[in-house]
Image (cartoon, rainbow, N blue to C red; front, side):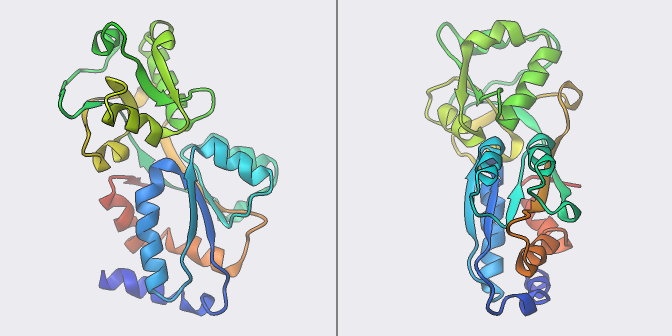
Length: 249
């Protein structure tokens, strides 16, 4: 803790008179970014204003003019989307984190499965159950899930049984509440939940690497925003992410 506060203290010259920063971040970053916000405020900065959701939704909001100083995506695709439209400061873009895609079930119905080519996912769903997952048409966790299920030869059979959600946390809630017997989320989301257990881990080679690029936006490019981005690359910040279960690049 002492080292973390010292690192924040190095950024204090930027704090005086600075406007509050607005951070738009992938839903799976909710808890870790809230942790970061606490230390930002304790070190003399104004509280962060934060918005969480699917990376696709946030990227489109930024494109439409939503005010933001920093964007954090759960995949490279949606950061590329903003970069192609010249809506980020390109020299600030850094892929800081990684994650793991997992299969989860309600905590009261623990199962362990070996996820491999052709494994019987339908049997986990039962007669009427659906697979909760972020909408594969645009939500990063759903995109990774589709890649994996295609690689494993399961996609065509599972498509009619998908419960498509707005983001990864919505998929997690479906399983926590018993509205879906199985879901696909990130390992970090499963770790914060008291309502699910991990049934299996998708092989890394079955989908693109899960990476989290961060960048200051073009419209919100201030000294304060760059100071916050700089802190996210320091050792104390890396420790915060690691405690939340992220792989630190």
